[in-house]
Image (tube, rainbow, N blue to C red; front, side, top):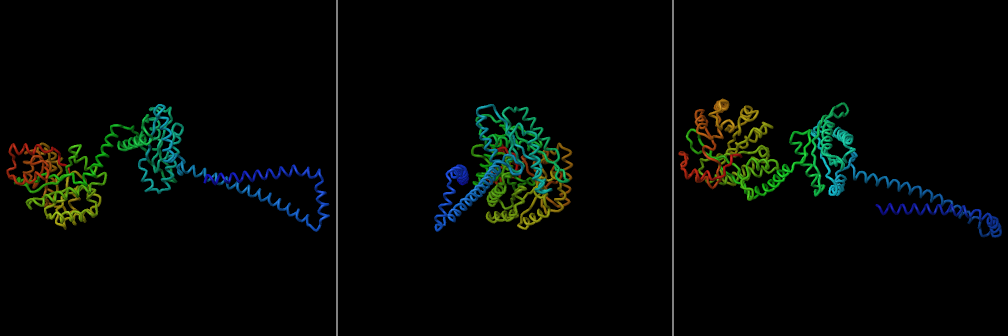
Length: 540
């Protein structure tokens, strides 16, 4: 394209030179020809040689010359206009390549280039400050009022940003509802924070779109950019501080926190390790005994997940399960643990059952029932020995869908239990509409119940409700003989907790089963052996 523009300019220049040369030659030649009486001589010559048709030939030359002159002028004008149009289109393309078409601000590409330029200044001059701004509650604007309203709001946001900091910062729109700033070298910390507060206040003012007032807010991440940091790393840190501002409540600003960033990096590393660990079955199924409270006989186990990292050691279940849920790996993790549990339990006394908690995200997988069936078939495990536990957060979204899934599980022969009963908002509705076989009272109501009158009333009420609905009840979190005695008085059917046993790995289960569970008080030697196992609170 650049070569074409250069060629056009050369042609126009050549034609212009020819035109000027032609007219200059005519102005100079005309008086000379008149002084030498060349016109009279030409006339006499043409009269003496009429048979040569000199006058017609001369007239043809004159006409062709005039036509050439006019053609040259026309082509010159046309080419000049074409070059102007091409120059305008090139300038427009360059403008679009570096500026956001909606707001006119620098786009992501141009802002990144400006960061690279600024990085050189930062290395030689005092630190600079950069910021990232993201709009809060912007998605509902598009959902409720349409994308035209969203675009209009973004334009007005850009105008307010320029009005507030346009003189002290370079502004770029990174995309969507995200903006970034590079503050001028002379701006200090106090001015940066003042600008952030003014921006937050400006964005919180209603935006008028047609007859509708649109209310949004913004969160801002701030970063002090010193030497030895690349532009990419500076933006990454600003982005971290932005999400710290959002996590702390939105409509505020936050500075980059190195300690917080370290935690984030460790979490990212743990997430990568978790993916590998799930694929390699490094996360193991552990088992916590469930006993008959009246007879103190072993009736089964709750399946729990435990991970011993090759470098980090024991990783708390609350940590890696949260990461698995956030990263979309919870389904694979749950199926891996269930397969291990069914494979192990298939060789135990067939009277022993296992209970497995399905996470809310996994429960909404449309393939869950089929996946459980495949595991039962592959492990040759009797479905009647399996209880699937779900929490209220799994079923609250849509009772009809939950009922269909629970009934499908029961059709396999699997029992279903409502976990953490009493901590949600719709327990009674859950029991009334869904086909549960058992409820589990949350440990927060059970632990130290003998000394908590309020919890005693709650648990007594739950027991009365369960008896009326003919449901089994499991109390989890039994840690003292006093807790056990109170539950026995209420005729609670099942229990689990540290009083009976902590969760143990599969290799220790046969030893527990072979021991005389009815006399569950262990010898000192056996107690020392179990206490040597990792002391981890049971979290599924």
